[in-house]
Structures are given as structure tokens and as C-alpha cells.
Picture: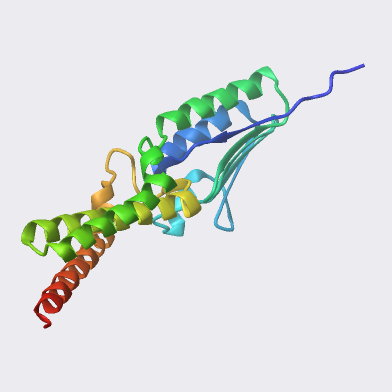
Length: 215
């Protein structure tokens, strides 16, 4: 008679990782497993250093598989799943080590940036300020309309990418110490968003002026 092995899996919240994080993560597997397999974007890597050879600025899919004992960590654009084939002492140790490692690298503001209710609510709020500017076209109301519309567009853009496409964010060409900030990485999109908001507000102002002068 022998006890039937019981597997276990857990889901992990949104994370952001860099090249040096990946090296430390693979080390956890190497310390406990006889061999480790790494796959990403259709390639099997001999070691984690080869991920730089892909020259990908952003990766949202990665698989790390430990053999004997069997432990897998699957990163995808929509989820992160950690699995062990049985609840042995070694495998539970790997599972807890990986969970603790990833919890430190969790995206702490994801509860806000990936909040569909808040992002959705920001749209009618922005348009209420546009209507206010339409009825009272002065510099103050136009400024408020531009700001709220820009925030609403950026919030919904961030929510869309975070919720649907970027549960996993990996920057394989950057180290955590020398990482770029959110604004440095997304400056072109942010400028475009606020230019769109400014143009929309200016058009609203001009149309309002024209309508108030129509007899």
C-alpha cells in the first residue's frame, strides 16, 4: 500500500520582473530540481542568459519547469500559475520560496490601474467636465476637462493592457537597479493621450463659442 500523491497549484497576482529577477527565480528551481527547462516565445533556452539574445523589450509569456521533483511556473499574459506534482517537503519548499519571491515583485498599484469599475466610472466623470466646459467655456473649466479626460483615457488604457494582456510583465533587457520608470517607458503614449485630451477640449471650446454666437 502506498499513499496517492496529491498535486497542488496556486495562482499568482500581477508581477513585474527584470533580467536579474529571472536569474534569482531560476536559481530557486536549480537548488531543488535535477534539471530545469525554460521556454519563452516559442524558444527553449539552455540557460536564462539566452533570453537576452531574443532582443525582446517586453515578454508576457514564460515557462520554468523543474524536473525531479516536478515543479512548474507558467507566466502568461492573463495569469500566473504555480504547480507541484505532489506535496512533498522539497516541492512545498520550492512553492513557498517562489511565492515569497514573486510577492515582493508584485505590482502594488494593480488594484488601482486594473480596476475596471474605476476606469469605467472615469469616462462619464470626464464627459461631465466636458459638458461643464461646454456650458461655461472659460480657462478653468477647459483645464479641468482636459485633465479629467486625459486621466480617464490613461486609466482605461492601463486597465485594458493590464487586465487583458499584461498580467505578466517581464523586461529581459533591464536589471531592476537600472530600470526605467513608468513615465520614461510610456512617455510617447502619455504625451499622445494628453494631446488627444487637449485637442478634444479645444474643439469643445471652439464649438461652444461658435454655437453661442449663432443667432
